[in-house]
Length: 337
View (cartoon, rainbow, N blue to C red):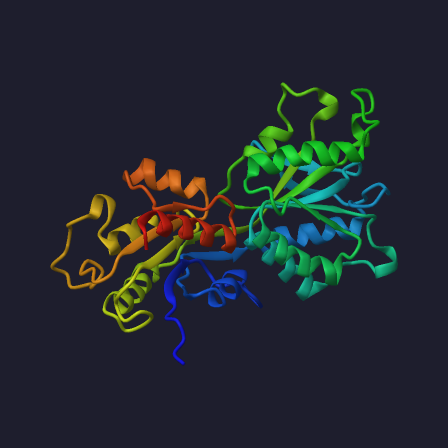
């Protein structure tokens, strides 16, 4: 009995280690996933050492911090975290931030024993994939921590969730007792949006409801030099029927960030690159099968739309494998496929 042929899906992301939720989901739900890394990540080890120092100094405990370290405020200025600086939780909005934090812990450990861990520490995250990676880390090293925001979907929604949840942990904080509410430590990449700190520290919000956020850059990101060639090779294999459905049926490309969008469109001959360079023999233009584009969320969809005048076929309502698959299903149902 022959099995149903799998639909090829090219995921423009680095495969997460040790497990990738996208591979787990798609490979067991009728797809043949292929990962094409777009981003190159470099961890900032000095800043990660600073994060470790926060744990060593008691910055997450009720005791007064004894170490002086440098973080970056939401407006990009360096701030001195003196002896009275304490943190009541951490924010992670990318898997790379979790991976950077995890590498720091795996290499150096956390400077306390299980009996002297911080009190229940809220860890805020923006989506299920990041929450899953954070859960593995939490279970091993921070068992008293709690994870919130797996279903938030975007930074704006997460910010509102934090305003309700974190302020709820400090109901007696008033304008005369503002220091009773510790800051949140936000582990970020070099390139990031500032919607979370702006929302939490909005001057228009009552002072007792504001939440101070300190950002510390733990990784930087750039496009891999090899991405465009790697993507061209992967597309060419599928278009010429060397894999999957033998060159028939749909080919899906899932985009996870604005980085790499231009190269993707150029290889596929879409958007502003339609009908260009068709004599170069890349194979991407000789479409023996339909190629469709899905984005992980509205940020990347809007970037494609506003920068290249290109409309993605699917925008996932939730940034997850299930969200992408549901968007694809609806799209194909509407086409009658």
